[in-house]
Length: 83
Image (tube, rainbow, N blue to C red):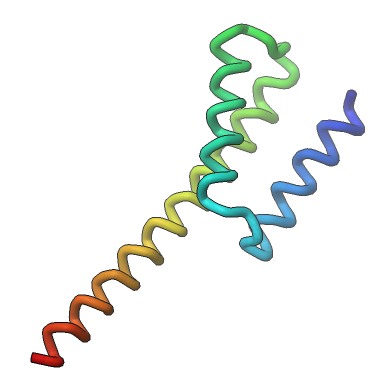
């Protein structure tokens, strides 16, 4: 169990460092975490790890959204300059 948790968090850590995780994958994992917590499927020991993982996933999502917003704004700016 501990080894599986380690592997899960290691993969999230790798994804954060290389930003290989897609927004939809991060959201899906967040939903899984919330569902497990809502159903009380986690022990107190696991709760802290899941909250940390969720926090990391939220950071990834915020970063993706911020980068997307900047990209869209730049595209719109370029359209305005073309007129």
